[in-house]
Length: 358
Image (tube, helix red, strand yellow):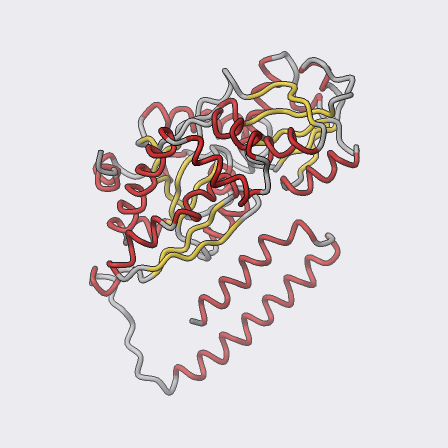
């Protein structure tokens, strides 16, 4: 229980650190560290009087997880709302804990510190996480939905073409899929990353800046993209069609991926079933998500219809594409070192063990 308490403190700090002032971060961090040390001291004292026996890592039965902690973003809230994983895992004695994050980078930060076991993000967050030394493992790919991400400008903006972005302030979550989409779009139209003024903001903070008029453009994904079209007079400048070739990835912590193969396989099977059902029932998907996300039904239909549902195996093509992402961010000096994405990949035989039943 102690480690769960400490992990939850870290998760809350990671989720909210972008909302507090820079000056306050060291004080908050110091408070959390001090509290964690106090809890550890108390636990060590108590353990001196206990007869608890450590679980052997060589005993698969003893090592079977009793809970899977899943990090999710609003774009993946349908899986949580349906309760499918709970139904599938409950007979196995495994419960599901859901933790929401504003974007992929924060989700993988939490995974790195051991606060979640599993989650899905775009193609860019794993690159930044691996470059920072995170112990993560790619588990499955996500079908790309290129029309579901876009660069938005105010409806009355003088920005009419991509080239008009030169010298402009553009907001996006650093290390997100929107970040890489922006880089690709700029290059396609002959601009350099240095030609724009990047403004690193979470989706919620970027929306607020967009409404205030303190940024010129916003690179974002659904459902935030759909919500902006609905309520903040946003105009699509360009979307990811012809640009985005990857839809993202499901990842697990290295320890969880190594020790909980059967749980991950079951989770992926349920995700694939939901994705197949969603493809065939888009109207019901939109009707389910509309009240949950606070987006009107017509806008939710638009968002749902531009999404491609499905998960895909990790193939050599995906590995090559992901290495290109890593190379690009390193070339732009956005990650501190060159990385080999294969170091966070499994063998073909291991991936076969995760593959959902068709």
